[in-house]
Image 1 (cartoon, rainbow, N blue to C red):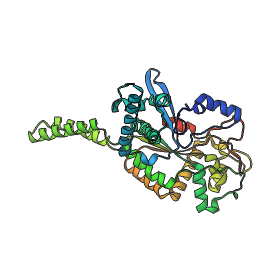
Image 2: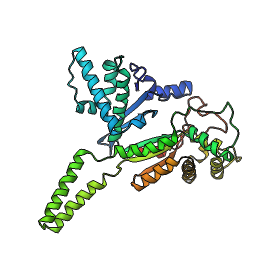
Image 3: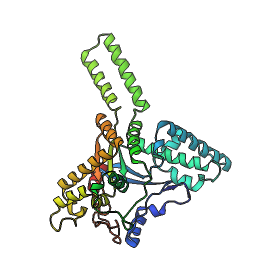
Image 4: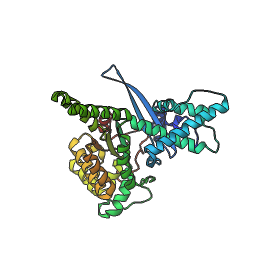
Length: 364
């Protein structure tokens, strides 16, 4: 993990093994804090023999508005100059170039190296660390095929019920779970579409190929060349141009779905309708965990609630649909057995996942 406040902290508390130990011993899970970037890299085998790298990045999102090419270019310059400067001061020469910095940001090798040798606290320290986060995030987002955007279910629930008090199951009190809201969701949805478009722009090499094919096609047309050859070149060029549209897949995941379902009458009604047995009103998400029809109805309802609450969500979905971006919508929860008015995660050392099978399918 990269921690701007304490760069010497290697993020041991966020290691997968330590996350599991915290869950078993304390019944709680730590989370990525403001100013912290947690990264996980898995080397997998596709079809049992093709090496595949799966990089997962967990980021609170306070700098997502800086995910554009201008900020990336500035961040790259700041990081490169800083690395070269500290090398000169220490009498080292690692031969830093833009290509080397970008490569090490992509492979995440830059994080431990900075923590060990380059996190010098001086007047330029904050700018360097902020630039490093932007650089690592942008490079990995740009090279990724799939991006997951998390929607804070607790924040969404509060804003939905503020506007639709009739959907409230019970009046809130101090014993109920309430998380911190750090992101303006309506503004965030506007940025999400921009980020996907920004990160999917055609790369320079592909642009050159398109230009060469177009020139070749025009030359053959002028010379009355063979129709079959012209059509073949035209088809190849159009294929490359079509890939200039957003080429990534996106998933929007509503977190803390258990809290939403226990505090919103309309969602509780869906669970009651599909729950196999028991007394209506006592059900939780675990009752419909294996029911695909119920899960689909629940996610459609949540989608409609978001659409009614946030104008930018409606715009974002319409824009992604127009750009033919494969978009997935998933409701997720770490504790599908949260009782009405209960505190999620209160059972020591237990996780009762909901929606993670859909998330796993998206990640494959």
